[in-house]
Length: 254
Image 1: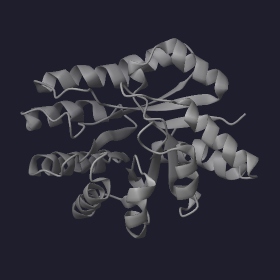
Image 2: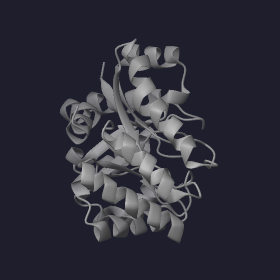
Image 3: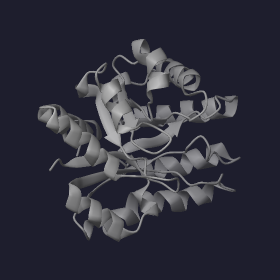
């Protein structure tokens, strides 16, 4: 049975018994990225979100022996009007987090670019990796703009995860993804197991992470196990281990 660390999730929205069931199937750790399904009315909303994800979840997941890897960040759909106040709150938690995330662009508006830029500068200051969201719509176009921002800030590509990648976007971006980590989200509406295997054939496995992106949207976290089982049945057990365990441990320093 393969073991895995889910490299991008919002399991803080999931009952503990569901996570415990996944643990019995091989789940050993979760990266929980900060996100809520509404735009915060004030920066203080984010303070409570970060307390929940970075602090309270550690205690909850320790009860069932699942490794907790918290990420704090201002999602592009969660930017409050007072961005400067939100950034000040975010910085209060980055010293306790293992990553900045999830951050990035949704429509590539100027407000989103500013928020993304300033957060990458904070991650650079704290030497943290960045989990970069890519949207469902216009994914390739928006991801290309995110790559531009990463390079403009001078943020290390090797510490950046371009997440939620799907074949349609990947086909036009693959020449630009060198040195970046690529996150594959096995969630309905994102990548299927077959599509994940297709993308993997073009990528160096040292740069691939796999996740369920479990959230309030329809989610099937067991897909990660199915994907890894497919790799192992194809005599790719070392690749499975690298993607599922070694890469997230290296990137998030756990």
